[in-house]
Length: 368
Image 1 (cartoon, rainbow, N blue to C red):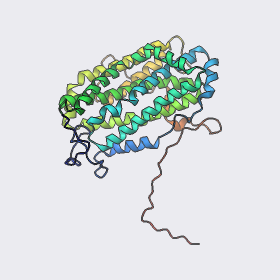
Image 2 (image 1 turned 180 degrees about the vertical axis):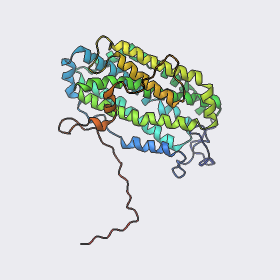
Image 3 (image 1 turned 90 degrees about the vertical axis):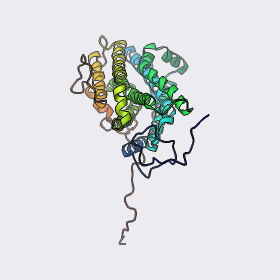
Image 4 (image 1 turned 60 degrees about the vertical axis):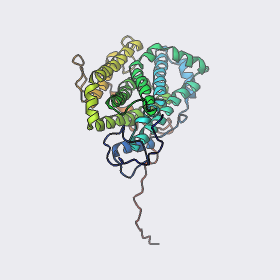
């Protein structure tokens, strides 16, 4: 028999539960107390960055895929394949899996918005294929054949699959609100951080290297919007969640008990990206401004950020670069630095709903 309720009229922890997870069953959607203001700020930031998958005209890329050198088109297609698959997974996992665990309305709002954003990302990749090829169904079939791309998701997918089962068990009152359940939640957040901070960033480097020569610019500009969402908002929310949970008793216990799994997960995600560099054959056939060594160092830098977020020392055999090895990445990840005039290309530099009123209860005298 289910013990869960859709609305908890007896909820009493509106102001007291320190964790974002596993509090009392939800009641009012409460923005009065604002227990987690950084999470709410992240939600607002995601709203301000909203955009549409059809803002860029991908039809001009149809000819480019026919005319560009195979070394460029092959990298673009394989990278799109990975990004499409990764965002497809994220679009149907974040809120649907985590909803039964969430205590904080701020996090419900933030992960709801991010889930919607992942749908936007996946739809964008799908629209790129739909408009860029004469027969998009053939390309879709080819995308699904790229086994190297799918294998990059294995570690993260395994964690998410386990949490998927735990989530449903918890929602059906078949699992207790205990430390083991919390540990699965903790591992899910770490998996998201690894996916978005290590694995997505490696693919973006290849896309933006292609953009550096002015190729496939509608695709590259769309991917730049996706990268902005991931880097500015998604990764930031994972950091906020982990920083908050590390201050709670359960969070500290989870950190200790899951340490071997977390360390293995970070390393396996990094190894998957380094193997992907080999598949791209960037050592023997580099792109302009990007070779195998530079991309491996970029992946190490991304992993170093994850180690820092988790307050873990890197594995002893890893040498984390002290500075960004790929100079152009700083420009592409900061949209304002790569913005051309609107007469030259489509403009992606904007936010919505960022104006706030500060004139309430003020009287202005106009002398006509």
